Amino acid sequence: MTPFIIDVDESVLTDVQERLSRTRFPDQLENTTWEYGADISYLKELVDYWQASFDWRAAEAELNGFSHFKTDIDGLNIHYIHERSPYDDALPLIITHGWPGSIFEFHKIIRTLTHPEEFGGKAQDAFHVVCPSIAGYGFSDIPKDPGFHVKSQSEINVKLMAKLGYSRYGAQGGDWGSVITGWTGALDPEHCCGIHMNMVLGQPPRGDEPRPDLTDVEIERIKQAKYFQKTETGYQRIQGSKPQTLGYGLMDSPAGLAAWIIEKFRTWSDCGGDVESRFTKDELLTNIMIYWVTGTITSSTRLYFETYHSDTGRAPDNYVEVPTGFAAFPHELAVLPRAWAEKSFNVQRWTEMEKGGHFAALEEPELLVADIQEFFRGVRG
Image (cartoon, rainbow, N blue to C red; front, side):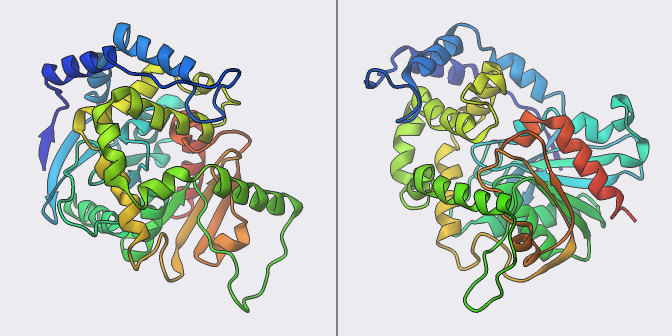
């Protein structure tokens, strides 16, 4: 377990500024904004801020306020934040991000989870928090061989918790982190006492399987999910089929990288079309810069290709017995029916959130933390 400090070479920061100054913006149709993708007016505004006001060193210092480490697992040097609670009997909790997120997503919730009493909570709800960077993301090593998919990361998470000496722990995640968390519960039920996810996983009935009765709300959500699949999943098709081709542009142009990521933060969050109603420019750029300074945007998108082309699929094959909690945020990519989730998971808690979207830890940290605490009260033992 080697302590790690984020310290980006100054030449990398100089280079990104030079590239931003040479950005060649595309045209945009008159009287349009975000209909065709990232809006040029907003992107120009963001690039101007990036050049004139954004301070990576300040963001770096904030991130370095947490305890970072690296360790070798299966030949990959895995980066993770490890923040222990002052309470020795706190429950270890591994939290996994997704795409296009990073460990930065959790900077608002780590302290609340480890020191709940400082935020009006109770010591018995404390966690020792572990936040790994998925291999190929951020400060973790990039897999060099084909075949690294979400189950592979789950195996790394299980081995990381064992290496840290945690014989009993919980797991939490959103986006790919939800899938990885689901696999963690499936792979390590002897040690993982519960899993909590803020993106609902589930399968519709197949073949002759009985069709559960669905509420009007659930039927409408399925319609919305189908519409999302039709209109908002082009990124999945590209990242799941030709990530290398995409990578040449995103690795070469910071403005292009920002456009690819920011459009997702706007569409997937509960922002009403105003991305900065949920995230500041500094937050958006810190997350983008983690991809840029580590050169991991191409490897991050390959996770789609490897997962879609694997035999394991995007969720555990068999029923997951460990207690499971789902926090259903209304502006999530899709909120599947509870009955579908119960086909695959031992659902013990289901919370219909009043607001929030895909990036729950950044958008609604207090709501997410409260639900995590409430769920794990029932499984701490």
